[in-house]
Image (cartoon, rainbow, N blue to C red):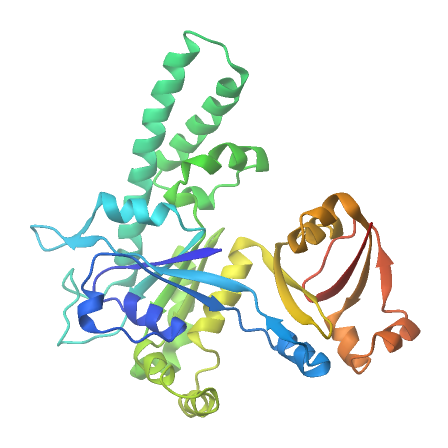
Length: 361
């Protein structure tokens, strides 16, 4: 899973990237035009607890790749210019985090002259909609010309979907807010449409706004939150200082400031929710591991994530939920006694926090 971090200049985009990846980059590196990538472990206290119980040879966390997307430039008028390079870099991401500046800093002027969250959010929304419109208009024209020569069924199915999306975009609405069917989304998948990507809007606040954070998020969410769009807040300057501390000291720092959750945990939790993802575990003395799957995947599909051969060779899944396992003192024998351990068939819908052991031929 790849999450792209975008934002206007001086919004705190690169600060957020450095904070969650614990990379402290030299200013000269930040001036370069190449996107910055970092793969990080997904924190999961449940996996850590399983490792305490089994003392395995290895513990493998799920991972997420974060990308600090670059390419925005200042136009001749001074306002931000969305370059072709920037839009191309955004297309490869599964979801986006848009960093929006709400802090005041006279030493670092906002590129558009003032702090205005709704305006900044709208600037990205508009550019993504225009980019998608241009792409769809070109494709629609091409399909119509092809249909004059051939009545290919795939083209006949594709055209009404693209025209439907074009109408939505012309109404100045991002496609992620539209209620598209699975079939429609499948047709659109290859186009990597920008306004269709799930969006997490991260409001960058300062220390003076700590007590107002929830209210600020609520006000922005009332206008901008919708299907596949979520509003959260973080404190860039505070988080940057915390990222330089050991974990125990960082927790004390958070407690002193009243910060309930780190930016990393917030982003991962909300990204999983936006993308419809969850985790299940495999545990034992050799390895304890977290696996990421989509909500609703059945046991046979989840087994295929562990190893592709398990899809065809699947027999049964031994299942116990993490919570029941812990209540039973970390003993599989006791979960069998209490009836929480069970055998499930291939159609069983795997739940977040399930511990699985796959029986296969």
